[in-house]
Image (cartoon, rainbow, N blue to C red; front, side, top):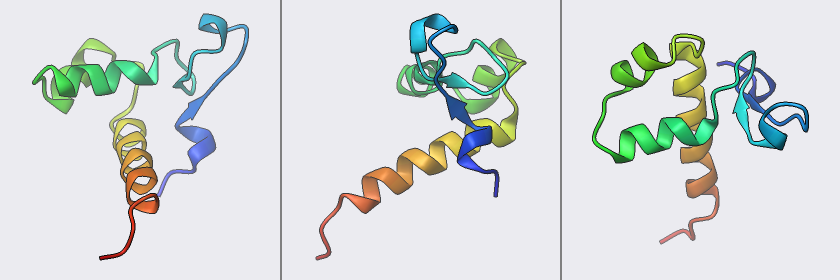
Length: 74
């Protein structure tokens, strides 16, 4: 699995500290916006070729883990 530090980071000198995919200027929010809008992961990757499939999937895994960590057991 890809390390979190290789997926998304913030830097005040890149888009004023907006969380972006490491090595790019692509905001992480763009991935969620694309998926929410009904686009596929492949379409997102086509539009933002500087983001790797591994990074995108890792970002989704991080989001899933964050949601599930906050859920109460049944």
